[in-house]
Length: 236
Ligand code: F6R
Image (cartoon, rainbow, N blue to C red; front, side, top):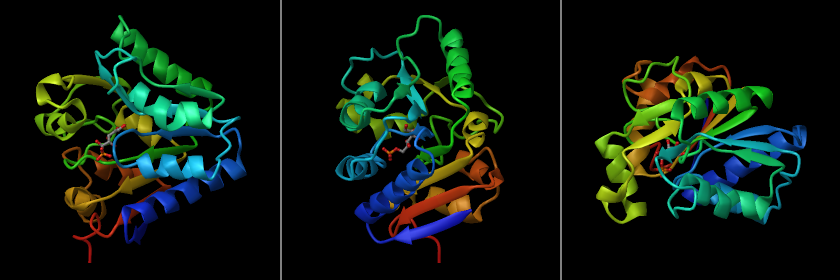
């Protein structure tokens, strides 16, 4: 595991953009795994400013609320449309369908789509303050695959800011499993702000345990963590 600590959120986004651009330079038809949420917003802005060429790239997202219509302004689909799909025009993109009628079938479809694309070359991850990756909450087995999950109260609280009221946050989501994430050939984890300090501390110093899902990354051979000073504040 490789750790880079930078000063501010903007520096994290810039360093992350360098790595994504390097991946695309090495392989224009890369398969990228992407995250939503506050953490990667600066990365996507950088990719726009630097005119990243995604014309041969295939994108897969980690997760989507369920059930939630694609047109809902807080769906991860809309987030991706605004930050990535419309401005960067990738060759292809896929995200779990929050309005699928048959969820089991949708989860199987998603796993198959990732495999058919050749697997993910570079997976971008954020981390929840409870250590979740994707929507794999504490207690998730490291062998888990794409499936429907119930969100923890703290995750719903953290995301209430986007919905205006916690009562409006969907209680479930479709997420890649930890096993799915660990199959990516390389992983780029971004962490910004003091709320992520404990999760980052656990990743680097804690025991590898499903109690803190992000610690699963210690089992992966190619992980790069980029953290700002606040997120890294518990590391010496
Ligand atoms: C988002 C995702 C989540 C977030 C995490 C951190 O697709 O899978 O695991 O990365 O909840 O969210 P932010 O970046 O909003 O702090």
